[in-house]
Length: 309
Image (cartoon, rainbow, N blue to C red; front, side, top):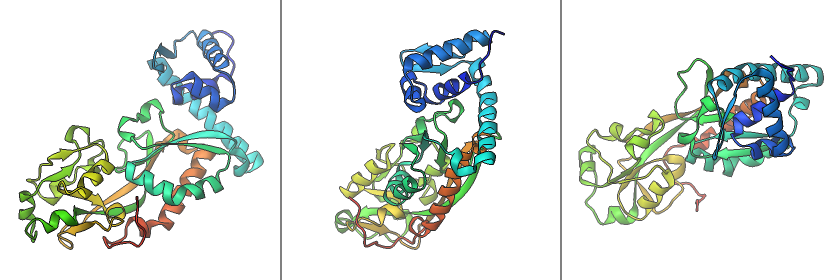
């Protein structure tokens, strides 16, 4: 092994998490040339190829994936030492945090929690990803994830932060043009709107079978808001979170009292990341404020005064 500089590991971690020299450079407040030079120096010192270079960016090699575990433990220990010496608040320096969330939760977060987040963490530049189905936790493409199901992998930590409910909705105009729906069997007489089966990225979204085993959606989209739009245009029935559907006065509940689904949101991160003061503080904040607003997420499916666009 050649001359090894511990400081190069922060450049390695930044590129491993971002996958792009330019993104890592912005996070580290330096140039992409400096980042590339540090990565080259680290690979030369270790006599290992840590990244595969391709037009899309830098992808971790098997050797790089093995190193990231050690590098993150070192990062966590360093941050913990800073927290102990200076106080945990001082350890959260200006940095970028990437958080992946489902679409519906993302809108809820931006409407209700984002101002509180920026007040609590003015030094954190937040990157909010609302397409977690394309996110790879194993490649560290996100620091923290809000998921619909707990992780079953022992290297990751999950904690439930709140529950929410879902119901069947239809446009008032659609219901006015069709006979009343009085039981679940009659749902099969109507077109449904739902997710594309092979693109359902979380078991918690596979809920049409809980409404009726015979339901097969006729219009499908990977976006809950595309489904919402189709429902509002009278294309059929759709299962929607009540914290979304109940904000639209042109939508009506179908079989209220007979169909009510319950799901949960889970905070997930790598167990090593969980020990970093910044991530620990953000997760504690999210747990606190989401539970403070749980009455909005887990509210009964009744009309709300606030109307969403």
